[in-house]
Image (cartoon, rainbow over all chains, first blue to last red; front, side, top):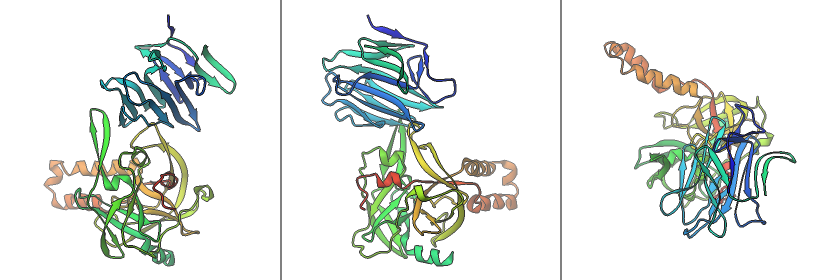
Amino acid sequence: MPTRMSGNYLFVNPGEKCFKVASNFTNYFEVGSPGATDYYLEAAIVNDEFIVNADFPVPGAPGRCKLENNFPRASGLTQQMTPTGYRILDGAQQLVLGLSAKNNICLIQGKIYDGAGQVVAEDVGDDFLVYHGPAVLGKVDGTRGIVLG
Amino acid sequence: MSHLVQRLEPCVVMIRCLDTGMKGSGFLVTAEGHIATNNHVVSTPTLTGGALTVSYSSKIEVTIKGERKPAHLMIDQNAFEPIVYDYALLKVDGVTGSPFLEVQDLTTVKSGDDVLCLGFPLDFSTLIATKGIVSAITRRASHFNTLHQLTSVVSDALIQFGNSGGPMVHYDSGKAIGMNTLSHPLQDALWYRLHKELTNPAVAQVPALRELIEYSLKYTMVGLNHAVSLEHLRSDRSWPI
């Protein structure tokens, strides 16, 4: 059974710069951990700027889904820039990862896979489903919000 | 300031894209003919299915000291960074020993410092210099991708269409601190308001009024402008120095 997150406000107030993950609003979002897992995504607000880094495999794709300081580096996948962010699509033109910033809110959408090709986390409507940790939603200095795994 | 304008004049170039009709400005950043300009001067954006792509001009011509020369792009045309931060780097072959503009570290620039903006706005083919102060150094969302922030030098030095890509120069050092990129939304709002008036049937019936509006569209310069930081361009692997 996945852990289901929805409707959480973690370390943010209305109007403040934040990430929106399904129906959750937060200042920080992390799935996996560099070095500890073969997949990770980290979204943080640094110097008042959205900064997202990610590196995880995509089943059936020749390359990994990678983001470096928001910029897609996903060779073998379709990378599209939009006026508000980026979309990375798989071979079937399905969304793997999407970022979109508007009015101080950065929307993160997609599916994150592990090395075995299993979905680790995904947004489904208003719910953010985490199938296994580690995952963190919200962080201020050493204090973390919702922590899984 | 005349001595500074005279010294900088050979460093500033007019850019024309012969295939798209775009016109803008740029400036030499090396003695070997490397030219910095805005990405939007040499590219045409297209929005298809929500995806923003640009196609680059394949016939770029620059005018250096009155002499027209072909130029080619030095940036990675598949990269997102030049679009997001609105920069491009050109190269004119066969140039050696040219005067060029050095780039000043923005951390040494303060609000209130005097600046010059240089370029070839509107239909001018002679260098136009305007003067102002640094009003602020800010971070703002990229006009091509709101996910990213870019550093911007805000100034009251006047710019118009065609100034894009030209240098904003620090008066004390004579070095470039930014690339004139866009004007304040208020200026755009005025421009579009005036433009809309041209379709007003009442205006069409009064030739003198129409001429006045057309003149204003062409020569009115108001509002603040943004010059994007050259640090974005300097972080590009194509930057030659």
